[in-house]
Image (cartoon, rainbow, N blue to C red):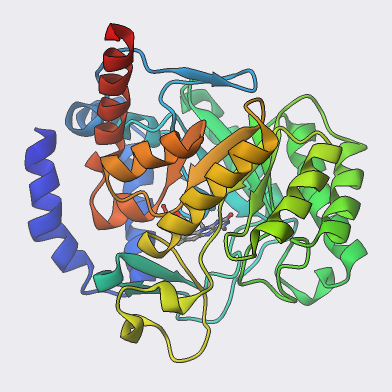
Length: 361
Ligand SMILES: Cc1cc2nc3c(=O)[nH]c(=O)nc-3n(C[C@H](O)[C@H](O)[C@H](O)COP(=O)(O)O)c2cc1C
């Protein structure tokens, strides 16, 4: 059944969907997914088509048990509309957001583009989201229908507006969002997104001194839930290493590697890039940079440091490559859009097959 839907998606649905503006498609997908998540019947139909039904591949990371080690990465379900349907696709969790303290319109349209020959999306969303209060309220309303085993990470970013430009305003903004989620007891873990390439005033906290100031204030009020930092993938290793040292100083549990690629020369087909810089690249242009950074980070930080590996997982092989590089968990967005939703449980099947092989050896 899943194979039939995989072919249907690629040959019929995707060519039609891709005729429309990507943001319209994204909104349609989200609205449809939210409706599918509201009833037991539609949920079980989706599970029947796409769900993972193999052996137990659950994994416990930093005390949290993931039913499958695959999560939807931050930015797709930025307003937390989909936690009731995503487990039926084989996801063990999702990262909602990035959420900001105040509601945020995002950048001017067009905010999303496609570079399909290069298997990439051009993302210029600018942290568009409903803001912490509305998102907390939504998750509270959905709480009863979200599966207990489905993990929700909260990606926190600085509001993309003129009120959060100075360092201290920015820190107050992050801390305010974090405190709201902690007070509401929403979220199984938190990711501090310091690397959004599209925010007002730039990615200021991806710099050791500023990250130090930010993490010192978060560390002062943190609870026992894991905190990760989402790293950029473009800076040279020495700069990343300096950020990792700050993460170690404040005992964050790990990092998400990583965010969008800012270098348009990494597109397979350079002509697909916008003429001026207008957003980061997802998908294939992220793959190699992210995998190499995962490897270096694993070597540098040792085995007890958590790495959530994301960037350019467009196939089962790409997913296994991230695990081989040292990722504990996997995250994706673009692969699900370009290849189809079946990719999630295909990866879960491959993880199960690999475990079977390891058990036999
Ligand atoms: C439409 C879209 C919106 C995104 N928004 C965010 C965001 O708000 N916060 C964030 O940390 N990452 C965001 N990202 C980056 C993704 O989480 C991920 O790091 C990146 O897309 C690489 O993964 P992929 O190749 O599987 O898409 C976004 C990506 C896409 C495609």
